[in-house]
Length: 322
Image 1: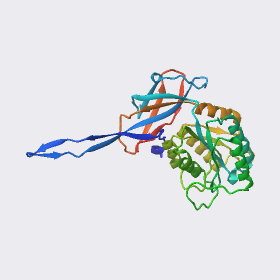
Image 2 (image 1 turned 45 degrees about the vertical axis):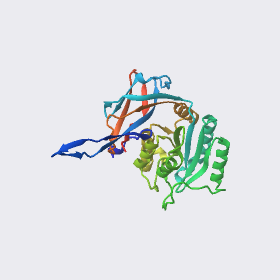
Image 3 (image 1 turned 90 degrees about the vertical axis):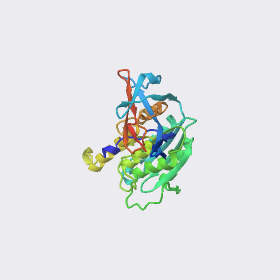
Image 4 (image 1 turned 30 degrees about the vertical axis):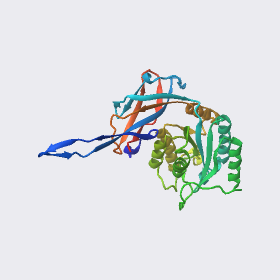
């Protein structure tokens, strides 16, 4: 499983093919050697940087960081800062039975997010899921419109379209599929800085995709997945095995995609939404041509290291060379 634990970073685009052809003389006649093809890919990595007080840094330059792939330092081909870029976002709400207790909190937190984070150039869609993936609101720039659709969904006063293929689901929580198909059908080719915020407990019992497939989809599309966790413990506050599994899942998906996990019961939603928005709008992008250009399906570990002490960088941990 470790071989699939990293992240595919920010779209890998073929930009050059090298073809080496030669002639070898043999027994008085020429013979063409087989052509050797190698795709060279520009790898883009998005990252954020914070100082030792946790403040986002917005003035780094290329000579203040070093970039490594599998421990080998790479030459940086381009370096750019993104400030106030338009955001293309997906809000995913777990509406399965395990989250019924939190439905009002979901609504309140989403309304807070839309009011405090969504800018005039940003777009957002809303997906709710149990054992069906319902597109409650397609891309919009209107928070009130989205909230109206959410209320209609909760009242079951309107039937909303599904995304993804029709699946025969015996049970009621398609957590992984909700992320996978949101990326596949909504965010994969969208413009701007892309991210998902999913409100759930991380527990799944009916998806056709697993955790690692979901992570790889986020990696390949360069989509950050912020997980907002609402866990309902058993009596006396004890966590069940399913609770613990869901906590680990949400932490893993967030971390592997380059984002982070929030415990909604421990953090003020206005505070974590502010931090998420601030982070999405203050990012860097660094690109390089790998010293190892071959597409061999191996996982390549990426490390971005600051040259100044006290600086912390968070980015995806790598990519699959496909």
